[in-house]
Image 1 (tube, rainbow over the protein chains, first blue to last red):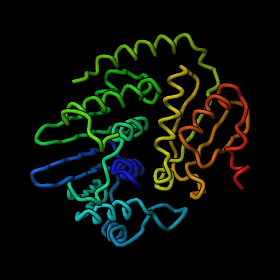
Image 2: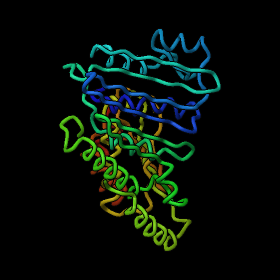
Image 3: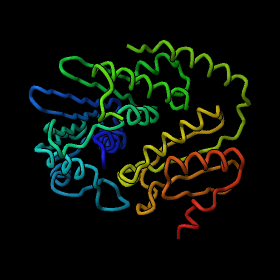
Length: 187
Length: 122
């Protein structure tokens, strides 16, 4: 993976597979604390302690087609490379929260990358769940929710190319406004 | 701040076109593998290229969807194209540029882009 947003795209698939109804992605950038924190929280089926320990230990997967998974392991490696860490908390029947913390100015921290493209692709799958994306930057925030989109669409498909293109532009423009201009690391 | 108002206009336009369309129209399906392997190999820009090209051409009977690991991670990004009444075509090692060609040649003009298929990769 070359961008943090690709890790987000990957990890949220786990939440979707877990049957979550609400998935919240929060990116919090605190320059004074030199920290970038990504939290992905869902109310899906969760994991028991044994499974959680297995996932924390190595390349694990709940799939039956093969025994290993790499999503969490790669995300953890990315965090640790930039003096950060990854924590995974989960409770059977309640949901799972993945938190990855990065040193903001670390030279090894990947760029955020195409966040609006990532959120657009996740929104395209949001038939049976809602996605909430919150970006906090120096005390201000931008929130995107598929709930608002669905309310306006009144049953028209959220995954039609026109709607998705609109969602991508909408997030991109609002992020630029949040950051006070274009940022190199958000393509 | 960009508001969600424009979305209402898009919805109205969509509703109008849905009413004009024959509901029995067979849909073309484009499926992009979007598991860890696909994402790491570049499936996201491929998927956005498909969506862009379809929106640009105003193709209404094409659905682009995501799936998990298709099973040949070394050939990712993998894309499957289903045309109504025809056999599935699997494209391998896709790029945004190849995606544009698949839409033009295969989806619009019904000519399979043989050199991108799994058959010519192996």
